[in-house]
Length: 362
Image 1: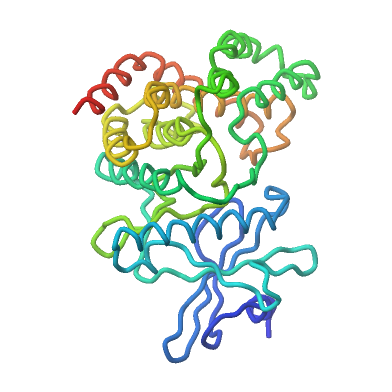
Image 2: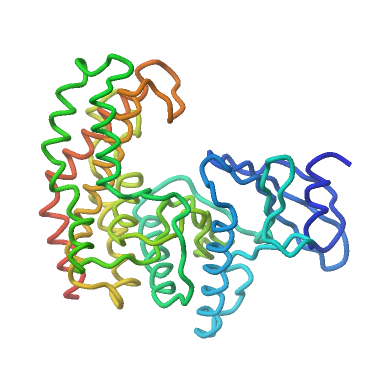
């Protein structure tokens, strides 16, 4: 019995394991498809949890189980059908835990949702579906009775990211500050505005909801007919601001260029993608959104793009210790591409706000 087969044997699965093979191209966890044989058997997804990213695996698994069980309950209350394909289902280990630990490695198993697929390409149609799905995801979790923890503390906390940035500037470990000083100045000139969400939260005006924190089109499963089944990749689901989820999709999905595009003329915001995502999102989320949340959705697009620019530039100044790079200036190229996208979003911010206002009034 090889290692992966042996790991699976510690979980309460049905059927006999036939094949364990790599699945997907995830950057954080190692993922495998477990094919079984037997009557009424199910297939499974085996994952090795990246313990260097998710340091509290017990908290992580409590979060994802509580989230999926609450969503299942909501779908049942709605009278939905095919619920087993519309939410993830995790399988306990034989010791009762929702993960298995061995040799400093953490493993978990979930049921593989049959006949489901993901899409990598973002067009207006799928941007609309994505917006609708993530708005619905947030809506279902508004009244979750469990207190979820932060699986990555301060993940979307702009004040924390800026503190790290300022320390990197002061230390200048890789002696790169001179060449990037112009961008440092640009980013610091925006720093006060970009901490607006944290300030509003401290004033009691902007609530924290349960948010996904990784809102990409490939974090949804679709059925055979192209209809959304469910949101997946729930490891970063934790308390946060709805404007962060909204903004992160715009940052990744509505960029006309690549995240590390060397040709900055390629980089701008695709307003067709923005409008489609915003329409779907507002349709499913406006029932619970406060006016302050709606008003700041376009700011969310600006905030998350600014935050990623800060993170890339911090890593470049530090000497490339966090992000994987393909060449020595990769993080600097990423920083410039993200900054160009930020400038484009700033140019379109009023247009974005007007469109959101129109959606709400319809």
